[in-house]
Length: 499
Image 1 (cartoon, rainbow, N blue to C red):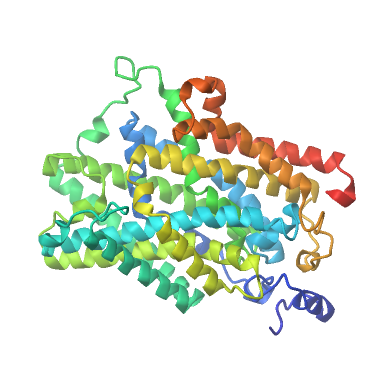
Image 2: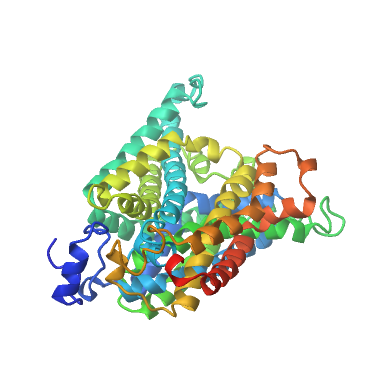
């Protein structure tokens, strides 16, 4: 490792280089390496947000009773809310050039930082598997148009999917592994290609749907099930807040590890404006495209088709099918690598910086992503939002509350960069763990635990008071607020040497 940070003195560089808590991927980024401007961050979020899960996101909300504009507005509001911790946590990455796991050391301790890093990494492994499944399933469905016999196989024991589905999944998973092996430059190239590609594909689908259906169809004129006289009249707010929590959960992962990207920002202004332009607008636009095209399919095909891959398989032109398959694969691949590999690769590297590189961390992510059998995570749209998205928001909300309380309130945005890489420095706390952060994390997770156990049917509904079970539906908000307050109280009342 030569000069790891051109802005530090030689003695400071030597102090960081000599420690066990650093490798090239975890070292601070120098000002000369910070080249991301507003456009780079906007493109990053356009690239990550324009994906098949976003296209299908409104389907669960409409299925739950919302009309189209309520669903799109809920998605927009959720992303507007999550943008706030996103920008706040990005500040330290831009100011100090540090990745997420290193940022966690200030609040959780040099060893304790592994806990939020691993919680974040495991969620990313699940998302990595989901995106790999979506890409593989797109290949499977489109190939099935050319060779229908391949889709008729019986489901494999335990897996619950047929051999062709599993092989297509493994094929697409293998492409992801190849990109990880190629490194960060290939990832950047993919993002640059993907951003305009999937937006163009979405707009083309929108134009086609409007032309073929002579409008956007019945879903855009469908009333809300919560309106007066409808089946769920008066129940809107009961459904809205859990749904909003799920929408926040969609990018709650990136709201924590955004320093992994913001460390390359030229200025704070670049990361703030770039993210504000790219995230909520793209999520709302792409979810609207999904709603509008789906609505039109009701007229065109006589059935409502939410999955864009299923829509594309209705085309008979083989050139269109092949181009669509390639576009979807490139788009899903780019989203998966950027959103679900960069962070966990750094997080796993943080466990043993001298032994685990970014590349090895990426391999670990991929293997865990397969073992989690992602097709089961997304099999049920209701479970996808109310179990998967909300459940992990109950973990990530508290981590966000602790990090923001520590950096902005307790430390007033001042970190000792060298000490972040010193095992026995200011951020060692108690044997490498901040007891205050650990207590705040556990206390903030506990209120959502009973509701989660009811949701996954490990505890009978009648055994948990309704008010306590309902807290789960506000998991991100409750966890963030409780952790924020408990952490700051703990910092004030705990003796310095044991914090």
